[in-house]
Image 1: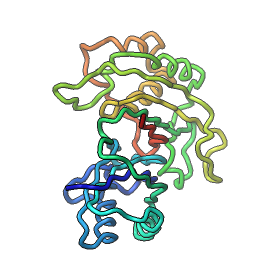
Image 2 (image 1 turned 135 degrees about the vertical axis):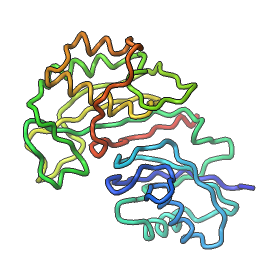
Image 3 (image 1 turned 30 degrees about the vertical axis):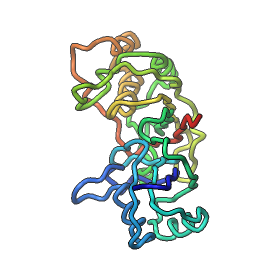
Length: 259
């Protein structure tokens, strides 16, 4: 049925959306993308598949979806038309043609997430869509040590909410660091802000926000570094209660292995 296949990279501010996946009643990114494509193509049939799902209020600087069409299109003309009709908080960055063997779900990929935060004082309200402020003064140096412990292969069963019956909890984290925020700047941000960078081929439901939550517990002294490290092996207790707020989380980059 489909003769032409395209990989489209997009950016979006997730603050007013209920994530990527289509849901009844609420607005989602996928719903808005398909609604716009229906306007662009009029009577042309199409199908779209996202590379991954982001939760409600989570943003993306580099998300991708695959578009299936019966007819070929002019790439530059399509990109201009698509962007002209998308809402201002979604932007298509690029489009490239891929072959029929490309599968956006099965193709190996590496995802880079970043969580932006400050601490010790309340942020300017304009910061809300991009960054979270923790009320307590946190021990950032201890949190940096904790973040490093996430690197490597670990059991993240406690770092997952509502897992599927056949979920695989062993995940390999290729990069996990807390660094000075150089991702984003604004005049209304606090003077000192931080970024939790986390890279992996795959994440469990709410995993990154639960990881940030445990780093927060470590930084405010609620748990020790030994208790923090044991969380990778302790399967007897359920997932952690504290999940860091979603709006400060961003899918920063999606890498595909196209070889």
